[in-house]
Image (cartoon, rainbow, N blue to C red; front, side, top):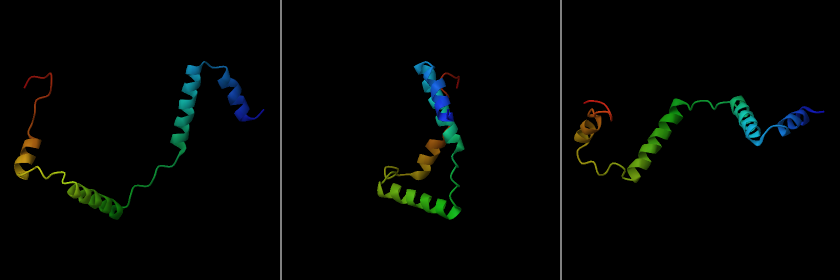
Length: 86
């Protein structure tokens, strides 16, 4: 009997709930065994950031901000947390 057949024989005896759990575990093992991609080189990363800013400019993402300094100050302003005293 092959390993696959042994696994199948055991899994078939499990409840559908436990079979899904076994499948999740196998998927986890597969994910863990795959190599993680190397981080992009600094030059590539810089180019991607530059491209992102170009796309933001094309979409006019921040065009409604008339005073950037005031916008930044307002954004950084401390705010109380919900459910806590000020």
